[in-house]
Amino acid sequence: MSIRYIAVGDSLSTGEGDDWVGWSRRLSYLLDMWNPTGCQFLDLATGGATVGEVYWRQLAWAKARQPHLVTLTVGMNDLGWDIAEFKLDEFAEDYEIVLSKLCGGGAVIMTCTFPDVAKNMGLPEKPDWVIPYVQAQIYGIGEVIRTKSEQYGAVCLDLWNMDVSDRGLFSEDGFHPSTKGHQELAARAFQLLTGIG
Image (cartoon, rainbow, N blue to C red; front, top):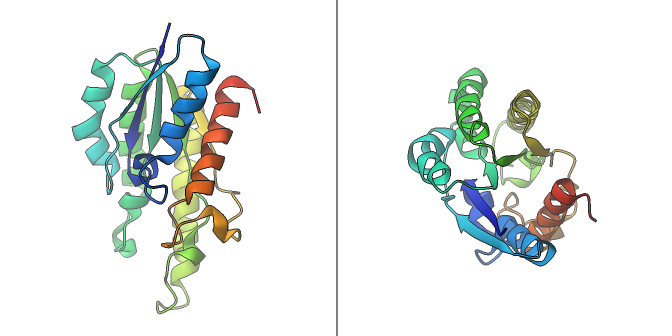
């Protein structure tokens, strides 16, 4: 049976930094070669999506297609640029709602944390406290994703320890992966799902 795979989330899944190919589509190529009957891929992710937008604009479409696999990448746009307004507890509540809905349909769900990209994000003109604060918030978002993934039985692609000093893994903006970075994410995800690699 062909694997029905749907990506939901933000620009990490749309392929920004990778000529709009992206790690999720690259993962689908690997699954298509691995599975004798192939892989059908649909990308519902949109650039700039927050967890609320995933819930209202992507979730129902994803569930209606009865996928075997769903990948979820969301959180960085919830943090946004107005970082002082970010409420981690509210994000955690909204993220749990989305994840619980996805996990209720029988599909394998893969979540994704984010690398420690605060120093790469073009924040040099900000006060000294900003980079450590953003690092703490990205880590906090990752902790929510890790904890909720374990709670609901999702597979977590944990990127917190990705080597952010290797700028070849990132695009010019410093936080979206480059083609090389998207290839690495796809390889890591494939290994998590299949044990191969």
